[in-house]
Image 1 (cartoon, one colour):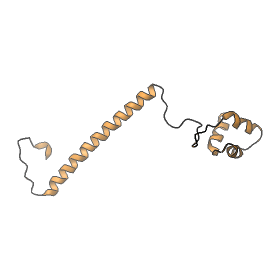
Image 2 (tube, helix red, strand yellow):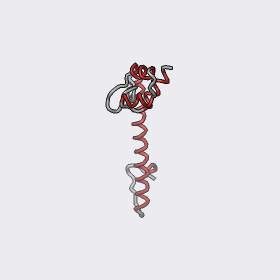
Image 3 (cartoon, rainbow, N blue to C red):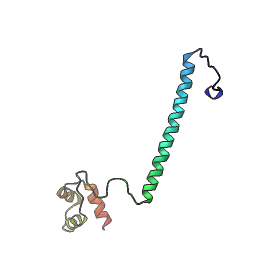
Image 4 (cartoon, one colour):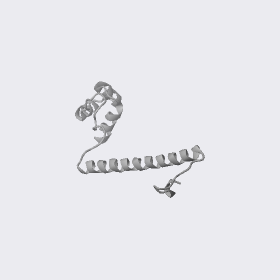
Length: 106
């Protein structure tokens, strides 16, 4: 309906629900358009940053408490015969990064 009227036209609404439905459809369309624009800008910005060499996400090997896992220490402890779980306990971290380091250095 809204696409068929001109500025000079007068719209007489006999039922409010019809007008409300048209307005809701219009608002939904505007919302979708705005969402698409935001997504395009975000994608373009991320591509530009990636092209400059910026990496996203948490740095590899960084723990929640802000410390980094020293791979040399992990490998030394593994060479001494400690299990991955024991190494994780010594370093006060989860077992997952310890296992990753051990797997990458086999």
